[in-house]
Image (tube, rainbow, N blue to C red; front, side, top):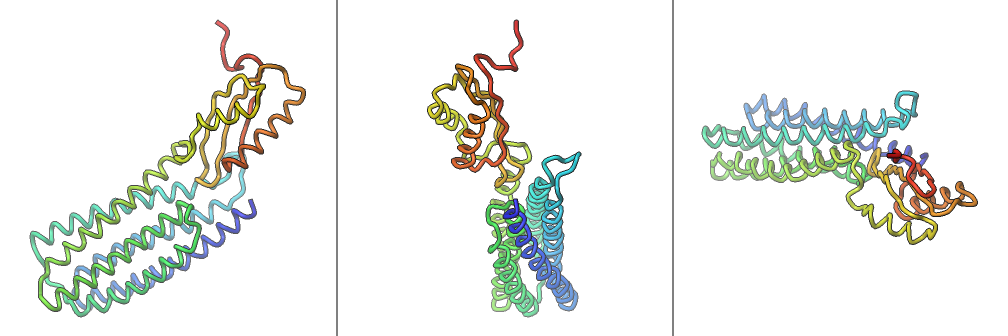
Length: 295
C-alpha cells in the first residue's frame, strides 16, 4: 500500500508539472491568436483549455484517491482515478467531434490565416507539449489516469506538429485548405487512442475481469493443484483499478478439511503470486454450494 501511495505521489507531481506547462502556454496562445487574428490559434487555445481542465481533473483524482477508506466507501477512493480517466476519454471524443466539424466548415468556407504568427506560436507549443509529454510518459504507464492525461497532451503535440506543417505550407503556397486537412488527420489519430481509453476505463467501472485473465484456466489450475477440490464456482474477478485486483470465489471440497484456514491462506498466496490478486474472499464449502436452495 505504501508503494502505491509513493507511485500516486510521483504521478501527482508529474500531472501538476504538465498542468503548469499547458496552462501557461494556453494563455500565450490566446494572446498570440488575438494579436494575429488567427482563428486557428484561438481554436487550439480552446483545445488546450480543455486539456488543462483534463489535467486538473487527473490531479484531483490522484489527490482524492489517497484518502483512506471510510464507513461509506470501505474500499477507499482508488476508483476515482478510473472515473477521471473515463471523463477524460469522453472529453477527447468531444474534442475530436469538434475538430472534424470545424474542419468541414473550413473546407466549405476557407479562412485566411497569418502563417508567420501561426508558425512561431505553434513551434513554441511543440516544445511545451514535448516537455509535458515527457513528464507524463515517465509516470506509471499502466495507470489509466496518467494515460488519459498523456493522451490529451499527445493530442496537443500532434496539433502543434500539424499547425507547423500547415503554417509552412500557407507561407510558401498560400494554400489555406491544408489547415483543415491536417486537422482531420490529427483528429483521427486522437480518436483511436481516445476510444481505447474510454473502452478500458468503462470495463473497469463495470467491474469486468482483466482482459488478460483467463478465469476458466485459473479455475482448472487451482483444481489440479488441490486434489480435495470438488468444484470452484461463483468466481468474480474485478479491480478497483487495473493494478488493484479483487476476487471472490466458492471452493467446494470433497471431504472436510483438517484446517480450512490453512487452505484459504494457501489459495490466497497462490492467487497473489500467479495473478497479482491482492484482495480475495474465499468461501469454503463441503459437498454442496451453500447458495443452493433446497427444492
